[in-house]
Amino acid sequence: MPIPTVNGTIATASTSAAAASLTYSHTVNTGLTDPFLIVTVFDETTALPTGVTYATVAMTLLKDGKTGAVAIGTSIFGLANPTTGANNVVVSYAANHHIGSTAITLVDASATGQPDATAQGNKSPATTSHTVNIVTVANNCIVIDVCGTDTAAVNDHTPGVNETERSDFDQTSATQNRGSTDTEAAVTAGTFTMSRSFDSSSNSDSAVVSIKGTVVVAGGAPNMMMMGVGG
Image (cartoon, rainbow, N blue to C red):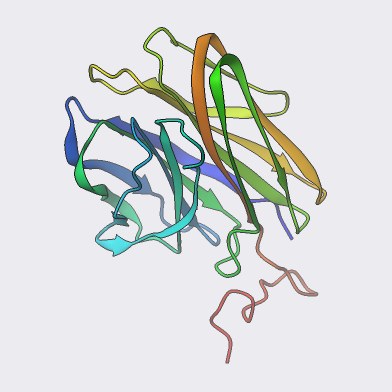
């Protein structure tokens, strides 16, 4: 089972003012092996998106981080075998919000049984760090973590050890919530700590998922039953 990896260009976008939706383009390359699209979202409330689509196809909510009284929303959506080419990601809400989002294409990801595991966490009162543990079930996973802060003075999220920062940006709005998305390879199943440090104290919230790799049978071919296309 290979570890899923990031492929191509990562897309990010945010609203310039409060809005009920955010639309931006993301490209899924052609000829990929077992692609899986991840879209992370953060906003200035604990409201969840009513839906996220890619190329008009509905994505599945894998995990949200709305816990406790922290007024930050984080969520992660997934879609196996997304349409290739440049297509729109549309993040929709029931009311106007300040929205930030990141789109990432993975390869070598199983089309079924996702997510492998999930976790969530928030921290209040304000502090300069955030951590959450996820316990992966399968070997050879990629862990994806979206973290949001609610203080305009925060200008940087620094990823933890062994994590790769995929995005880190402010909403272009008066609220100036900041969000970042990190990944980490999880070779052996177990507990992984996803963390951030901030350059100023803030409340924080995060959603975390692990995505498992494609199951390979003897001879190196993908296990088609596991991919959901077997008889």
